Image 1 (cartoon, one colour):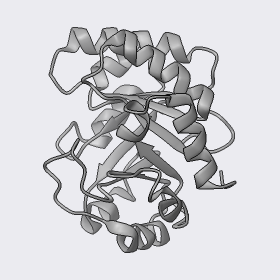
Image 2 (cartoon, rainbow, N blue to C red):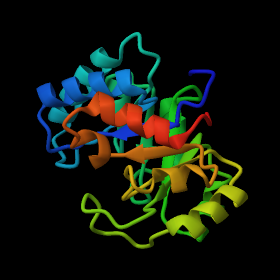
Image 3 (cartoon, helix red, strand yellow):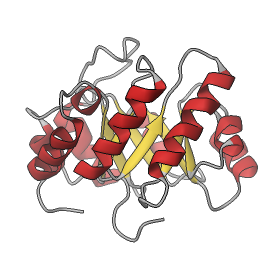
Image 4 (cartoon, rainbow, N blue to C red):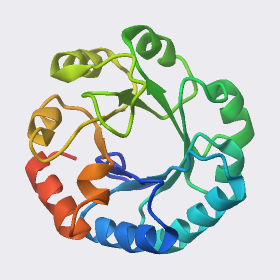
Length: 210
């Protein structure tokens, strides 16, 4: 794992984009300053997921940027990814940790204060604080943390936190100012006309922390 903060600018891929587009996008985004990449595939096609993950792994080779797999421990193990990110309805974190071993990165999404508290004792490396703001990519939001909720979470959590949900150029400075360890984005980079420039601008807006 990198010695500096690997969570700082965390790219989550858009599962609607084809592999070629995705590989070009990730390559540009890491040049722009993305520090971690999570591959998502929500359509349940494991073969397609493995193919996408393996292609992104090649793009990331030698960059020092960790590859995280969303939801699927089996896919993460199959492609020898750097880690896996679980949601609340996925495999329990303790079981996932037993399967992936002590070295892989394990992340978990938390959607409210109770989940945040309970997660503190789990064998995870970081928590995804979801969702900060409402977003078109996530329609089943239980809770919007907002800036106040995120600030409180940062002050109470012993684990590194990654903010996700509705974050863009307009509000990233406010998010960074909470002291959160990382900021995860989908649309702000995936749908940018120039992903490298978009990532570089986001890094700039976040300031020198990290």
